Amino acid sequence: MKSGPQKNTLQTLESGVDVYRKINTACLILIAVVSLVTALIYTKSILIPLVISIFIYTMITPLIRYLRFRAKFPRWLAIIVSATVVLVPLVLMAIFISNSVSNFAQGFGVYQAKLVESFNRLADLIRSYKIPLPDDMLELKSLQTMLTGPGSVNFFKSLGANAVKVFSYFSMVVIFVFFLLLGSGRAKITNSVIKEIQNKISAYLYIHIMVSIFTGICVGVVYFSVGLELALMFVVFTILLNFIPNVGSIIAVLLPLPIALMQFGPTSSFWLILIIPACMQFVIGSILEPKLLGSGMDLHPVTIIGSLVFWALVWGVPGAFLAVPMTAAVRIILSKLEPTRAFAEMLSGRLPK
Image (cartoon, rainbow, N blue to C red; front, top):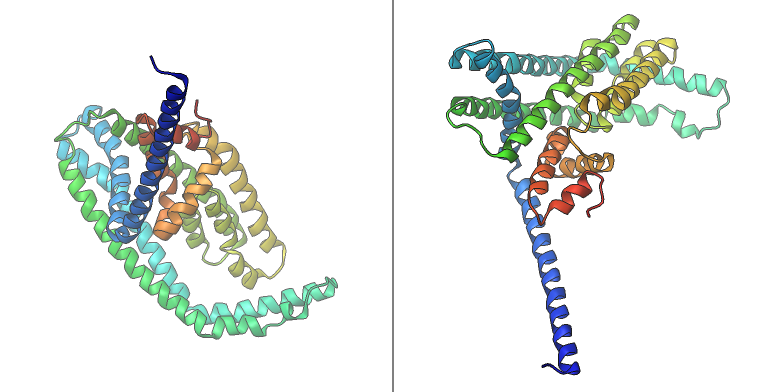
């Protein structure tokens, strides 16, 4: 039988070992996270198109199953039809955006002169209302320098370089999707985690695509009714930017404002282009979309904002588009493992038990 001092010493040793284990586990987790983030950054040229192709594949798979088992299509025909339905709109959208940006770059001189003129009118309007603003904010020198200086030239050079990068990404995505479709149906997915990730992400993507198209149509009605230049391009950008949570809708509202300002000036048409789409984005993003999605992603709003910042820092603009489905997939995986289940609950906005 152990004496009192020996028992206290043993308990102290056990508590010290327990603290050491916790510190060791925390250090190992930190090292693993840093290593994983480093790997994500240095392999993004391969991982980004691979992840995009996997998400596209999750959209195509339900169509394939429906055509095969409900419409009784042969497997090869179901794959061709499903891939065409999903990939052709993406190809057409990429071509349209590329042509629109190219045309805008070619006519940049015209828009530049109009923007300076519109800014001059806006400055006169501000002066007429005697709004107390610093005089240097109303001068055109800084604006002209920004538009005619090397910054604008470098901007369009980088735009061209990014267009080449996007094209290379898109080519790799098509190749990855092709090989994923070739292997579809040969091995049935039995893993419950993979099934849950596939079902939830495919449902999220389909609902989000429909909501984004509806938002684009509503905004397009406003743009075309007032006769905004490049209206169709801004509608397409609205649809795409809606995939970036919270921030994307704000960018979509602000994006056409320089063109609207140089075309209409600070008139009623300009304010309609600003106010009505902003109200539409708020109603659709805050009321309609959450009701349709429900608790499908099971992510807290703070988690969504944090994931947007994290993936944007790691993978740039593609990471911002992929933030929500990537974080949702991580949450599902964490929820299936006992040691990480508490982290999954925190991502959902629930305190772990």
